[in-house]
Structure formats: structure tokens, C-alpha cells
Image (cartoon, rainbow, N blue to C red; front, top):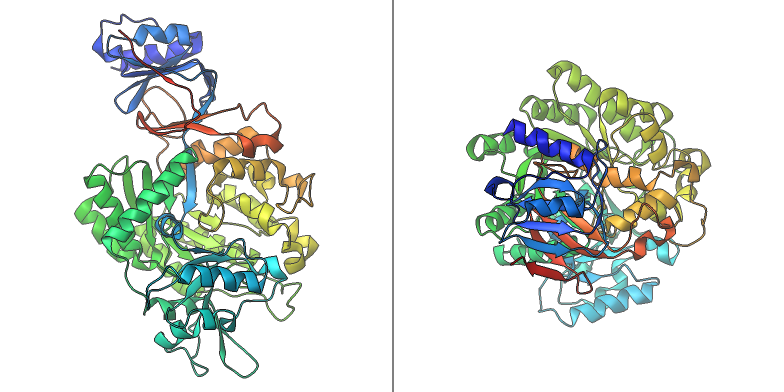
Length: 571
């Protein structure tokens, strides 16, 4: 088998391999031909055709050469000159919450308090009495920066509790009904790492930040298995239509969390052969002893569904004013943000989880949060000894100069979401000033320093599309069209670098590089077919490119209506 593999690898370099088609081992189930293929493999970056047998790739090369792998039952798919890349991997999603959001109230388009209220009122008309209204994803920057208030919606939601989140997930607006259920009053003291916003009279406005959101979670209903399954199906359809073949699901433990229920929904789908894309399911860092025991009893999963990753937090978000900085916010001189957890407690959890062989990823936004977390990672690595641990910092948005070099030195992975740069770029300088902006979403600097930069969406917080993420990283044009040459343009990267961040780098960040991330013989047949070659078109046109087909493990999980036709079985 090693000799066969060597021969097939050699075939890529010479444009094709011509074995006898009588050998069943070399006859493919499918031949995808007539394409422009970017393999992501630096040794053999281009091909025209892929041969798939079962779930894996058995050959790549020219369309002519790959005919040698066609048998009487081989299905031939003509890709009609389309562009093929390794399947996109999203390094950071809140998958099932985002799936349920597709049927929840959506406030992303609300640009005035009146619009906010009207959209909630319209949604509540479809709800039963006492049914929770969730979702939201509002952005107060769209109407000038003032936070919403329960009085905006109380009169249109008298019979329904409301908990609608800001788009970053670090603030929630609750109506009076929900506050009453949670017994949040003027006398309620916010938990450590959280804020209950109160008005001049000391009454809660309905805004809860970070750990204070947990007060609502205690009274919220647990989603049923049927609701979870529907959310998974909806989220999967959305991901596959965007060319995504694998996600790293960070769960969501603020509102509608219940990350363990997420894992059970994934396992239920896997047992029923209903999982359509690959999932790496992260659990809360606080649950690390339970996760370690769970792995002892259940293993770590398979190529379709894996677990053993842990997600934690050190601070909040820039938009909520809770990201932790060394210096105060420019627009709030008495506020530098804060840590949502004590450094000693966080360090002890990371040390225990790492010693147990678990994979740790921590959310950090502000420069002080990132510096503090890098210190913890360095300390834990020294205490627990050298091993392949692949610590990750989720978002890594605002970095000190020293932090940029430390990522590579410590082997810590910056797990970033480039769309945030073109969204936050509209207003971030007003929050933290011109100097810190130079090191905000510093893609170019991290790559130049040797860090293993990885990309994703942070969906529901931002759009799911990897093409929009690539566009954001390459152009850095803010969504208000006010930075046509790029916001902090020196941090732009190339399309190929962004592609690697969405494919091979993400596979590495999830311990899946042996099976996915590049198109090579023996790897899983996960790839995405695009309408245009994004390496050659103008980067500003990348968001207009269409996903024509998404293949996961050799299965056509998504085919666009306007996609190339299937030429059928060879007679």
C-alpha cells in the first residue's frame, strides 16, 4: 500500500497516473473533472480533476490522466471550469444557537429605537403567551450608540419574556417580564465579571452584560431535543450553502447555551447518519473534569464528530465596553474593561485541563486580556512540560506589540474572525484611539511573525460566509464604504494566505490536518466548488462569487440550482 501511495503521489507531479483500470483499488466511485483546482498542497498546488473512492481522494491530476481511474460504475461530474478549493473550515461558530436564530427575531437591521420596537412587536404576534423571545443580534452603534432600554419594548411584550442579545453576545436586553422572572431588581448585585445597567433612579434598564446574563439563564427553558435537531438541520444547510465542510462549534453559555445539549444533538445526528458536515464540539472550560471523564467513557469521536476542546473567557467585548485593556477607553476614561474571571482561577483550570490532555481555547479581546492569557499559557506549558497542545486565543483582536511576536514563540494559535475588522472598523477608533487601532486585527503582523493564523466567522455574531471573511482580510474595506483602500491597510493579507487560514491552518487548529485542510491522496474528500477563481479576480468581487457545490467525505451535500450538471454514470 505504501508503494501504491508513493506512485500516486508521483502522479500529481507529472500530470497524471495511468494504472490499469481493472484494479478495483484504483477505480473511483466519482471523478470530478474539468476544473481549476487549488489543492492547498504546496508540493502540488494545481490539478484539473479529483478521483474519489468512498470518503477519500485516491488520485488528482489532469482530466485526461484521471480517466484511467474510471470504471463502469464510476460517476463523472463535469465541473465546467469551476474553481475548487479544499473545504472551508470555520474556526469559531455558535452553531446551534445560530441555527435557532434563523427562526427567532432578527434585529440586525434595526437602525432606530422605533424600528427596534416595531420588529419585536411584529415577531411577538406569532408567539404564544409566556413563550420566550430570543435571538436579536442588535447593534446600538446603528442608531448612535445609546443602549436600548426595557421601556422600548415593555408595552408590546406584556405577555412574553424577552432576552435579545447584542450581536457580539456580551450584552442582552431583557424586558420587565423577564427581569421579574429572574428576580432582578434595583437591589440585585451583579455577579463578578458582570454588569446590571441601572438608570438614574437605580432601576435596571434591562441591559445585562457578560456574567450578569447568567441570572436570566437560570429561568430560561431548556430547548427540547426536537428543537435542537431542527436548529442543527437549519445551521447545517446554511453552512453547506456557504461551502463550509467543517465547523469548530464553541457552544454558547450566555443565552440559550446548554453546550452539553449541543453535543448530544450532534451525537444523535451522527447515530442517525444525519450529520452533513464535520463538527469539532467545544465544551465550557469550567466543565473540564466532566469532559475528561466523558472522554474516558466515550472516546473522542470520529472524523465526522469530535470533542475534547474547551472554550473559556477572560474578558468581554469591545462593543459592550467590557474588553480588558491596559489603558482606559478613549470614549470612557473611567473604564478599562475588566476580566470576567480571576487570573489564578483561570490559570488553575487551564493547567488542569491541559494536564488531562484536553485542548484549550480562550476568548480574549483587549490587549491586557491577551497579554495576561499569553502569560498563563506560557506558565502552564512550563509546568506541564513539552507536548503538542495547540493553545488557542479566540478573537485575539487588540494586541500589544509584544503579544504579536509571542504567538509564534509560544506556539499559540490566533483564532480570528476577519469580518469583525470591517464591521468594528466603522467605530472602533472612537472607542480606543488611533494608537491601539494599529494593532487591531493585525493579520499581516501575525503572519509575518510566524504565527499560525486561522479564520472563521463567529456566526451568529457575524455572517457565516468564508468568502466574505476572505474579502474582509484581503481588502479591509469597512461595511460603511468609508475605507475604500482598507482600514489599517498595512494589515491586509493576500487571497492565498486567507484561503490557507480557512483551510489547512484551521485543520491544524482542530488537530485534523492529517485528514483535511488540503486536497491530497489519502485525505478525506472535502472540497468546495466556486463559480470563479478567487485567486485571479479582483478581491472586491469575491463576495459575489457563488458556491456551486460542497462535497464532504465524497458526498455531494450541497449543489446550487445554477451549478454544473451531473453527467451521470459512464456506461
